[in-house]
Amino acid sequence: MRLIDTHCHLYSEQFDTDREQVIANAKRMGVDRILLPNVDLQTVAGMHELVANHPGVCYPMMGLHPCDVKPDYETEIAQLFSFFDTHTYCAVGEIGIDLYWDKTTQDIQEKAFLMQVDFALEKGLPIAIHSRNATHRIIEMLKNYKGKGLRGVFHCFSESLELAQEILKLDGFLLGIGGVLTYKNAGLPEVMQQIDLQHIILETDSPYLPPVPHRGKRNEPAYTRLVAEKLADVKGVSLRDIADITTANAEQLFGL
Image: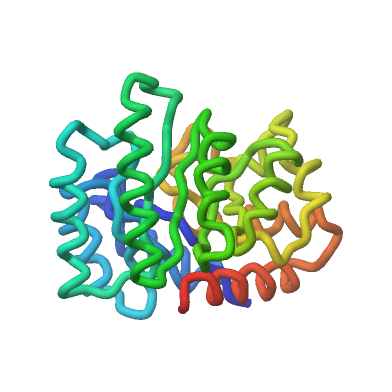
């Protein structure tokens, strides 16, 4: 059985003391590939080092996280894009809009998002979307790209069935499901019951959002298996079916 953690910040300083053990733990749980979304210029070096040390296991993305969009975003994005000259990436990400922490930057967040979406389309790469209090807006923005071949994932999806259905109408977009699926009263299992497995990939968003029974602790890629087990229970299918289908979905989306 093979699983893919499609969204993990393994370069985070929270893993500095035991990163190699964390990767070993993941492999022991059947998680043999880990996708690394970038955040900003400061996270690039650590991400590249991980990929160099673990070829065939760690796969990088490149992008500017919406919470790190500043007035000089065009300069920073240009610097991030320059890495495409010397490195290979499986996606443009983590990009998107976050209106939970700061609504005052919505305008530049949207401009930075579209700048990176256009670049992904130009490169033929999928996008990994961070959306917080902004999913309706992002869907409206992406409707302009329907039919142009844009594809990607709404990472850490935890919203309503109606929003899930609107995302799937965009064509080419999947739902990234993580630890929130295991949270009591989250409502996500009921939504997932109505969504076909062909639209789902698994993730952890480590070190954040750990699944039950690890809430309040550091998340890690090995816990992708706990998400898979919960999804198998929700869908009434075997763990192997979940692994086979979600892994195939991720391989197709990210070109693995």
